Length: 91
Image (tube, rainbow, N blue to C red; front, side, top):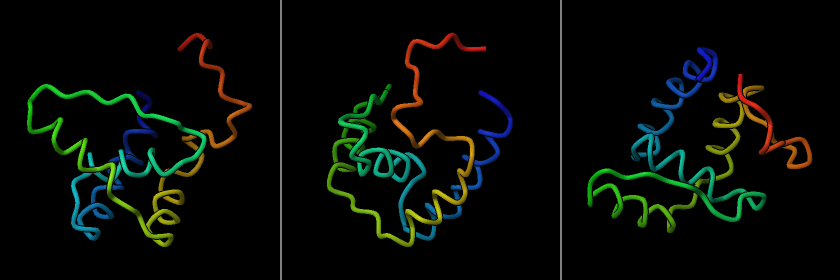
């Protein structure tokens, strides 16, 4: 993962804290609220992680928090589903 992406993800930690949730919950709730993402692929190595992921399905992020997340992630994410090439070769 590029340094710019990692830096921006680290910047989400305070936002998750303000919302009283873990970064894992914040990121999954953010993905699931996007109508362009009909599902999310998640990983878990422990049963408690599976439980937290399942509980996240009921988490609703308020508009202000979503705006702050979007501003934080900025240009490192692609929002246009027509521009996402799932078969593109990674660098």
